[in-house]
Length: 358
Image 1 (tube, helix red, strand yellow):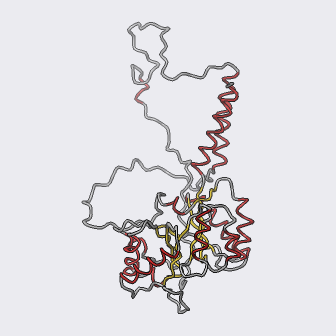
Image 2 (tube, rainbow, N blue to C red):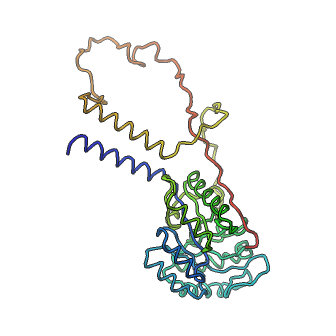
Image 3 (cartoon, rainbow, N blue to C red):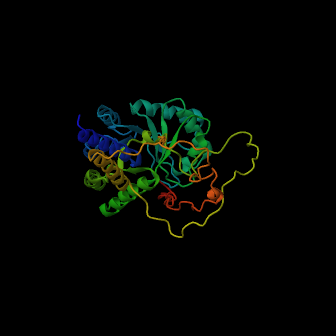
């Protein structure tokens, strides 16, 4: 292998590693599967990392779950839960008044009707998910399976996280609803919002429905997904660092108070944060640096070798005043360097829309 070929391979590997490390992760889940085979089959023609959530009592629930599984697609149970608003309910809708046994029985039936599921999310459910006791019943039932819970966040004060404490059930949260309306411009704007959140926070989960307008927008937008955004399944986000405010409260005795840690000397921060650096700029800088290094090697320039001693001058027993700290009167001067203020300000997570009554 020539040096030129080797250098090209190194550059490509660095580019791939850097892009993978910096890419924002976007998970998209399409709810309400099992009622509309025509549009649902259009969703199943999209990239395999688009996941689906199937209503257990829908007429095509089993068939769609099997077809999605054969594609290697991730499947969730889309379990009906009681909303705050008065509206017709799906069969086997969970309510806060149900006993733990009733909740467990409905979830068991749903697991039989939607094979190959790895997670469960709520259909509507603003009344159920805001009930701590109701959600504790749900999490106790889910702990018997290997399901994670994706909270659709149809209400802002959902109790899914505290209810899951101590059960081993892991919880994810929806950040964006793609199709609160059937207007394609609105859906496109929500898709772009999900991309921006994934880029800013490292990951985001968007939920949509198999409506014709939503399908058209996804067919248009997915092929042109930005290079620094990668589609993932929701389960790939289970090990992501939780967002601020989503961690479950501690249980048991509080830890003893500790002395505050030393935070360093305060410094003046810049009034205006510098613009963020995205993956494409980082990749370009790495490629330029590696290419320049190899051009120097090809020209015959020898790169500096760290740790090599200069043995050309014998030791005459006199202190070397050129080295700070060894006989050099300037060695005790304070370091005049300043803290680096170049890091971009970290954005606060977007609270997203909440649909009270969903």
